[in-house]
Length: 171
Image (cartoon, rainbow, N blue to C red; front, side):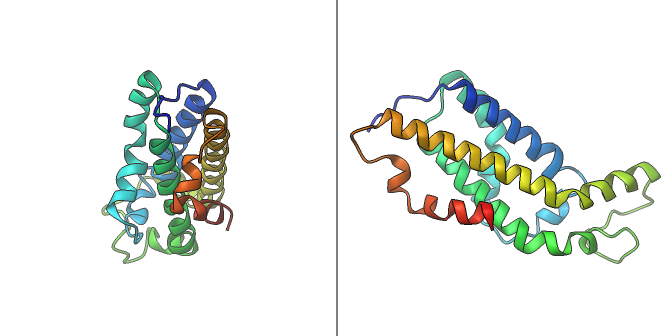
C-alpha cells in the first residue's frame, strides 16, 4: 500500500472550507458549551477540533489517507451525536432566562442575544452544511484512493468505521 502523501488542491480547499465552517458556525462561542455535553469520546473531539492545526502541515507535506479517513469518521460521529443529542434541545440548553447550567452568566448584551439566537436557529442548517462538506471530502478521498491504488484493496475498504459514515451524515 502506498504511503505517498496526498497533495490535492481540491481537497485542501475543501478542508479549509470545512475547518472555517466548523469554527465559525458549529463551535462558535454561543454553541460550544452545549456541544460539550455530547457523549462522544475525547478522541473524537481532539481529532475534529485539532484538524485545523493538522491541515496546516497537511497542505505543506501532504495528507495520508488514514489522516483524512480518521477525520471523516470523527466528523461523522460528531455530526451524528449533535443531531441526536443537541439539536432537539439546543434552544432550551442555551436559553437566556432559564436556570440552565449552560446559560451565560451575567447580563447579555442585545447584540450577543441576537447573535446567539441566530446561532441557535441556524444550527440545523449549519450542521447540514458541515455534513455535506464532510461527505464531499469523503467522496473525493475515496476517488483518490481508488485512483492511487487501482490494483489493491483500498484503505476505505479495510476500515470498518468508514462503513457507518454515510448513515451518520445523511440520517
